[in-house]
Length: 358
Image (cartoon, rainbow, N blue to C red; front, side, top):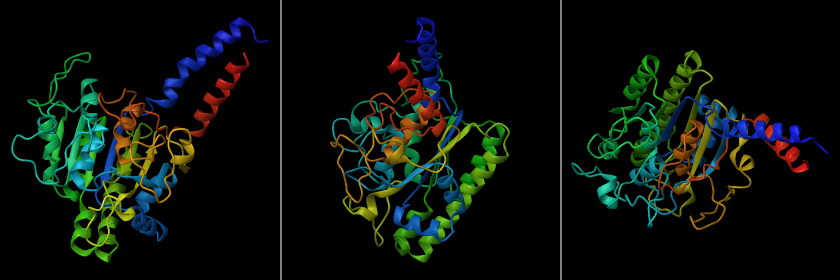
């Protein structure tokens, strides 16, 4: 039998350590969406050594190439709204943004839903963190307007940081937004940032997914990702304190991606790399109790064990920053998608076993 003092100490250590094992591993999270990045095409590019940046974060991070987009829609703006809000597109718990066009002036996610739809920017900003979105499609103005100083919700968390939830919003081509982002991060880094690259989607629509032009577009995006990796590698502020989450809104088949039950459209990557993240680990193996590899299937949101989805990213980012989930979100709302280093997992497991024996 262990002494009462020993039992108390073990319980105290585990209680103190567990939150840091699951959350607060990063000071900076960079969420990257590569528009139109279908997993089958990415897998071939990795195997042929053509995307060294993405290959690096995959081999040195926790990942799957068998993640899923939204169940009902495999188009850009609805899926990115899912990535930002942690909600499916459809249903009473969804964000209900179904348009893939440029929003009309003054239109927001909230007035479309007829209620406020909080997002990752709300939680990060209201907790005093700096936020940014860098986008390469004009339709992403939806997020800038929805979370601006007029349409953002009042900050009721701690100090009042205002209603404008996105400190910096910038639209431009992929090269220009990457250069601007790198410069900004060197001067005064954002704690949470979202970067969108349109290149693969544009080439896919014009020339076809898997075409030479499409492959070259993804190779170009990999170059931009390498610039971000170089930024992190060389920065004494960001190095060892930054996590990258990379995913996509959809893949594609031919020159289209709108068929929600087409595996080429709904099968996407989800890759996490950086501070506190397991190295060369499969996300489904790390999350065997909370996620189920769907094979080639197309599971609905009603399934008890969900696949990894692009919508997991928002609440994962907040968890990595040591923050709670987005109010009203349902995808990864319990923040149970875990990416910690194996040593952390082992320590928690050993401590739990010890406590059960006490």
